[in-house]
Length: 346
Image 1 (tube, rainbow, N blue to C red):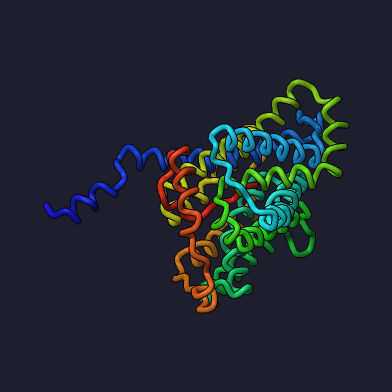
Image 2 (image 1 turned 135 degrees about the vertical axis):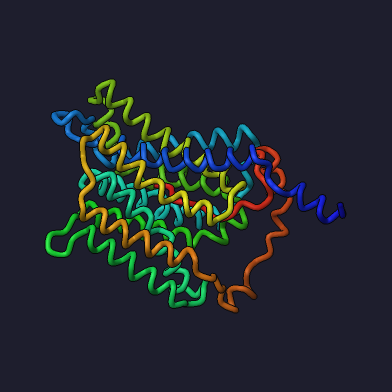
């Protein structure tokens, strides 16, 4: 056996490692599904068996809990990178899109619409991101991107309604668009500071910026919550944020972008099952048709050939300057060198 062949075998993930990556991706999607259903239950009226939590209070609790957790994690593991003042301000701007608007619109919409609708609309993020990448000249335009966008928009319109609007679904569609803007605008900041440092400061900024609105709502609500309400809030803070983000970060370093995209389709199915078990809500035919259109749009976009614009290719910054800190972070977290892509965080 030649040395190149031996090296190739050494680079291949073991069967056990591969199954761990698959298991982590299932955990990520299950965690987001739990977040949607438990969040819906937490915000339902107490007379209907819910916790009666205000969406702003729940968003504030989630941002604060995540900020504290990731600050303790990154500082305790000594992987929090130093960030320049300009980048810290940029992260503050990104947190408005990726955390404040993203999570607040999601929870406001979830309170009105179904958990399944929220999961289906979340699948549109890759399509919206591809369209924005073309609009901002990050990626060259293609027919497949246009077709995929048209299919996804048709699904969104069918779900939100034309004659009678589902304002909850509309809010979640806006939430997905905000997160797509965040993905497009955050690329270079991630290259400079790393994903874990970025997430830490995103939640920290989000908690600070949303505090004037969410803080009073959280204080007013917390003094009236019953024990089961506190339990629901704790689940929403822990599972779709801490568990999902941690498992997602671990899995992304051990999976291909295609595999991560495939597992996104699992979330609506798991959400539909949990919604039926816990909330007694069946999935409507309208939601199924919308899901089919959106899934078709994502498949068309996900299977396209990406082609960066010449200007972006020439001006893309080198990542060699951060290789030392990358190595330190990977060593502390056990993450392989290349971690492709990222998935939704609502």
